[in-house]
Length: 294
Length: 320
Image (tube, rainbow over all chains, first blue to last red):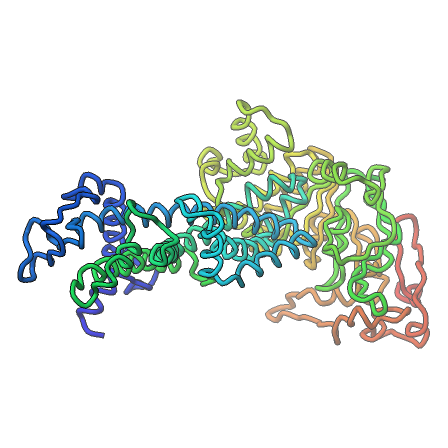
């Protein structure tokens, strides 16, 4: 490994420190994630133009560094003369909000199912885990198309589709973690001391499995971004006038040979966002779950 | 009698070839008594303890009768059992390092027990927590309340656990290998705590251990178990002075003795038998230096030696 790649990996995705002990904070990764979050929250104020501002006189302008580009539109414009940079920033909000909401809901639901299944055990566990298996076997894209075709598009429905695709993984992880925490002495002792099962589950089992859940959730944000982009690309996700990276990809694909920036730039944004959150998740994983159970 | 166990058996595995971890055990524990249950690994000591509070895995098949303060443990409803657990029968486990939840402070965990199990009102919690830590001679209790389990030593944690168990003023404390994970000087201090608990609160204590030194130092009575059965029982002084079962004698002989510069250890030849293959005869016969044909044909009957002593051996009379 060259010195340069070593330096990069140190800031991007350190998996162990030079002197042993926990891996150091990946500064670059954190900065990228923070940048995305800031763009999502304050995008309205940061973007130079409104995402819907049409200007037919300035359509299909290339990025500023290409011949014919202008500094007024740093990353160029699309068929209707809308500013690409502003639309990418607006897309950040949609993508991150969808991913965060879907991850939160599927996490909460999956944790609930996994916790009850793992702690109660027996018949309840068997039933719950077979349902989990069934959900993990569903072909996601087909399911999404079918659901959106029947329920219609809309923010709520998209999140529901993503929850259906993701919750089972949390349930499976939490259930396996609960099985091991349940065996630990402090849980046995609480039971023998006559603490109510419900209290043990909430006070001792749940907090001890949350670590892994947080790691999986951060890793899942990247996954959720890809899911949302795929749905939007297929036309069953975010609908205009809202903007999403997947939607921009779909809009620009007919002009790919002629105006590369219409597809390349949103594509790069997806890659950038997914890489950033995956890196953060990887680091959290090594830092907080060194046994590697994910 | 506080605790009366009659003909208790615990079996695992297939009905056709059961593994009888506890086989036909009779045991009495009186109020305020300290009883030591001795035996090597796999002799059924821990299973016996778990059976007393119905904490066995679901797969276990239990028969026989356990009466605590006159009530049958097996007849208790789920809620009644929960009330008995902790408040009347408390337990301490072997490893103090894993017996506390690593995510919460000592104060938090003591407070949980006090609030949910002893109905201590919130304003008095802190005072009671400090009182508890002082009762087990923990120094700087204010500071300990704010600390997490990993910041405390093993001995310190075992003290916290004893304080927790004692907080509910149980009538019986089951201590499963309470000193095994601790070093010798700490062991002594923990044993002192047990004696104080008994003397001050009148708590009966059952200590399960393979360390005969612990039993000699603190117990009133010793119960020796082998392969799930009781082989000998009696007052500590009498049994240590003159064991009447070959297994007890071998166990006592296996304690290292410092003889001049050399440490002498007499190991017991052979291994604990597979519990699934035990026939209806003396389980120790294969390893016993005194075994005769009768030992391999018939289970030895109980021989009562005075009021408190009994032994299960065909040749008990020849052992004195």
